[in-house]
Image (cartoon, rainbow, N blue to C red):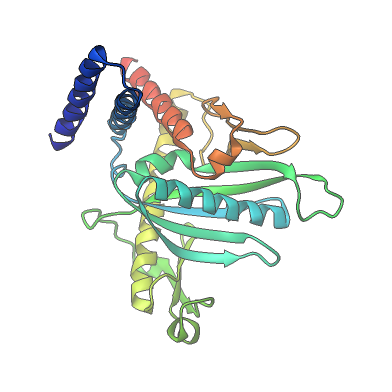
Length: 309
């Protein structure tokens, strides 16, 4: 209701300005009315989009992991570029970003990085980013200036609240510790605070270095592992349903979802929705809304179609 009252006040203010403009044209007032209505339209579009986020974990935060794929040093550089893109996106949304784990590349970039993004609907928006991201550009690491194709995988899990219960037997876990390394003071560098947990039956592994104590990192790593296992279970269930219905649907993880072409032309195109733009600088600075919105609307249309069937 508070949000509704704010929208109503903004609309009434714009209406009052229009009444004044009928008496006398004032460019500054006209611009003010236009700005108010533009902001109102953006907020209403966002509110409408949030109504599509009805998944069990959509309203919570997210843990986003980026892994460099094929492409050597270029792929590691690409993974770091994606890290920056998602950090910019999260900051634009007013979300908090915490670095949970980082494995740097030998020459440049990162082999893998895990970010915790805290804010309402962070997971609901970011789950659309899961998949393989492909970059085509002139390689800055090639002395001959040749064109290079690189890949990076993005994995997204929800931050689970305390109400979500998932019992994992201790015998299914392999827990190891190490020094976190990098910046962070004497405790981080001299004490084995980093924790790595492997779920033996599935081979799923997580590592956490953010916290200063081993116990805190163990608790956070275990929470991330539970989130991964829940998402894997959901995907397996969805795949089983698709197979029963006869739909030829591949698992989402590992599939190419978006192309980023820097050369010989400039374009970012989503292969699922067809949304594309030539404003690659804006996209790399976190302007992902058109891609996220198109995916969520497409997903909602598929759900509505299934209900009709």
